[in-house]
Length: 236
Image 1 (cartoon, rainbow, N blue to C red):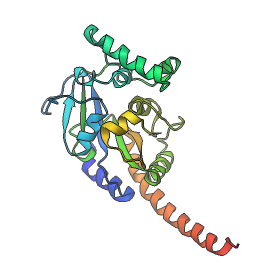
Image 2 (image 1 turned 135 degrees about the vertical axis):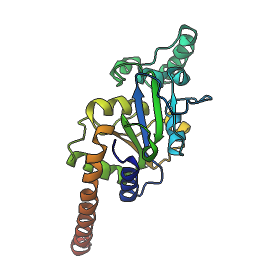
Image 3 (image 1 turned 30 degrees about the vertical axis):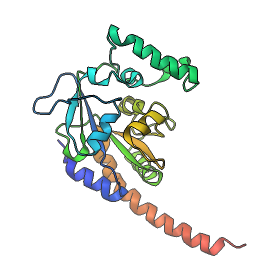
Image 4 (image 1 turned 60 degrees about the vertical axis):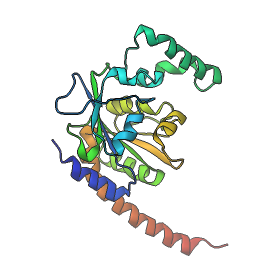
């Protein structure tokens, strides 16, 4: 297993992150030696908030049923007694014009329902993550995406939007993706108005971290070059 603590320090120092990146691991069976989540949250992305704050735990499909959209992106089967609730939530979104029914089939989903999902700060993850979620400012997202391209871990997908949680399955299939988030996610996670998300496949994190050092150094040099040119060539 990679040294996730060291990698988190690298990412945090290079990007000046104010939030801990979150490791998300999808499993086919419940893990041993990891605390099971106890309680309720309004959405799957709410678990990102808990993990970023330092908690290490796993959830089961039933823990994700409070968010119809999140259950959909995670391919979680909704039991008969919760179907009406899901229909009402989606109906509300359709009626508001927030999303159109024909958009739903194009939303990325996990290939299968996970038996458990482990959430942890990247540096404390007890298992190799499926995806790491970074919450960061646009300038840091720029550096992460440039590093992903250098590491050949970038995706060709456009900038993602609602729902934020589709970034997880999209990253698993396509590589590093960026997401502007969605209003539900921002409300549930306290994501700032100036923050967005970058999702990186767990298998590519080490390569992206290695490339990031070069990218940060190169950006500093290019920034100075641009400042000098602006001073020399901006004449009013």
